Image 1 (cartoon, rainbow, N blue to C red):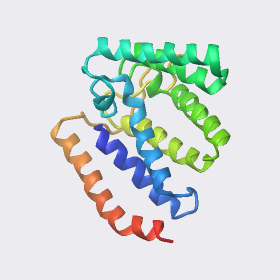
Image 2: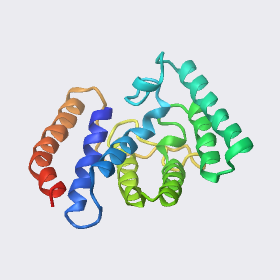
Image 3: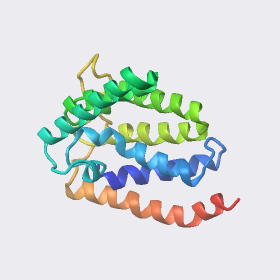
Image 4: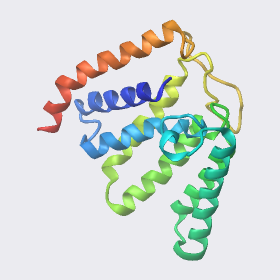
Length: 202
């Protein structure tokens, strides 16, 4: 799915769940949810987030930059900070550098738990724990949404490389795929237009 669709699904779901008091909603929480919705695709050089991170959108540049960032965080932590979550960020930047799209750690439950756990740990330390649930909503729904595509996701990577799909799937970029994603965005925008101001102004 496209990045816009993933953001739409994550934000719409967070708003809907807030109606049942399952999420403490705020603009900050929606922003975290939106970023988390895009996070699994950082293993793709042309993903929406990488549009603003990578100067050149190809696999070699993606690998080099994320590997370098990972080493930077690891060295920074080793010599100065000694914080477990900073070390974890470094490790995952390194793994992301060598991960291929849909065949690596970012599109797996391992990635969800590790990225989510790292974010949750930092959120509790710095006093913004209300953002933890929106993070998991955004990241988790990205994985579920990609299971509706014909490529599926390697949910149990690195333990199993088998890809899991829903019974009904579509090809990204196809007529039906574009139609389906377009409907999600359209219906979502209508829903948010009515619900979001009502919730945020309470």
